[in-house]
Image (cartoon, rainbow, N blue to C red):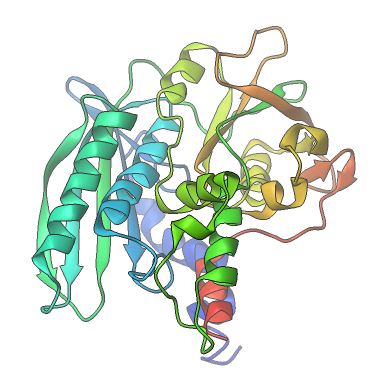
Length: 329
């Protein structure tokens, strides 16, 4: 394999992460280390859950489309969802910003307001407790989220044949919102332009909000843990792709019912960034409030994900390296 073939763009996210984790794995002393939605660390007062996510101008957001408030809100929401996916309660955020030196101060204070309000609305009691500020040519937002477990962490590896597959939150709305941005708010040269919300229908505004200012069901994570969830994860890269990750980790096959995914199952399966919670529950238990049945867990077969009993052959979901390359043409 040539050096060019070894680039992150050529390999894709899964192969890049596998190579990095192969180097790091022997040093991990965590109760749950790399590979799930968040790490679980033993502490004197209990178990602490920690995760980190980065938003970069270009591949993850465009300033022409997102306000500072949107960016603050979204950067909090995507991290809170990973904490919830472990069945934990978010307690703190640490925020690192790298910004160009000509960045207007109001953009940053608007981001702070978005961070504050997202914590208050989605995870009451959680707040920004520290961080870092540095100069860079590219605006980057890196957030570390910390949470506490009241019981045992719910991993993506615990699904068992016979379990009910359930979802809390939306699937496909954020992807529909992104499609609206690319289809209707770019100039002739393909550059992003300001969003004119008055030109959108009410459903389109909701889809755009799901993309720019998502509202993951954070409170449903601990509820699912108390309700007996055997496996759970944040759906950030597309339902089909993330379901395949759960299936692989649990050594099972997941069969999803297309009829349970609304009017546009294809987008629900392939679109990312909704940050819904995908969970498995024993069949004898009632689903916790906020979760709806979307399928069933089967013994491991040749395919990780089925849709109505047929191997899923649609779009694979979000890969940041390949999607960014495609967006650049």
